[in-house]
Image (cartoon, rainbow, N blue to C red):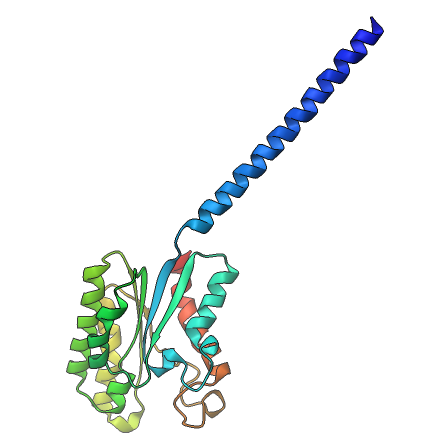
Amino acid sequence: MLRITSTLLFITLFAVACGNQSNKSQNEEKAQAESQKTANVAAKNILFFGTSLTAGLGLEQSEAYPALIQQKIDSLNLNYKVINGGLSGETSAGGKSRIDWLLKQPIDVFVLELGANDGLRGISTDETRANLQAIIDKVKQKYPNAILVMEGMQMPPNMGQKYTQDFKETFSLLAKKNDMIFVPFLLENVGGIASLNQKDGIHPTKEGQKILAENVWSKLAPALK
């Protein structure tokens, strides 16, 4: 009788152990499947559309602020992919012509950084505003659910007080009109600081780009989480 009882106990313990092992394996397989499922979900695209400031002129593209924002995104395991659509010398008129090509790919977040070259050329703020609005309209028409971000820009005072003020207000007015996340001044704490700009005094250094990334990230991050 004792031998039978011991045998039954052994069989019971063996069955429990196998059951636990089976459940463990099933749980591991389930976890792996969920992980694979997440990995297979296409990343949402963030398009940074702008000038040489966005392109990172004079630096490696990995040092430009959009790439630095991608690093922040990756560190938080957020499912977003940054696309750097910066082009040196781009004006708002040039951007209006170029945007259609970039919108051929899905866009979930659109970050607009254009107008600086308009200002340096003294282009009418009315013209700049109209071009930027046309770009925004194209994005909204094709991707109505996209998150929109406006990066503000400012001109030095030698452009004249009225022009400088009108130029600055262009970005805030467009951001408000189109319900965009607003970065008041992309070059905040960088513009005019020699140590944070390259020899041309216009384009940020590697350290300057880090500050640009912080300026943008502080406004963008809450919309991605």
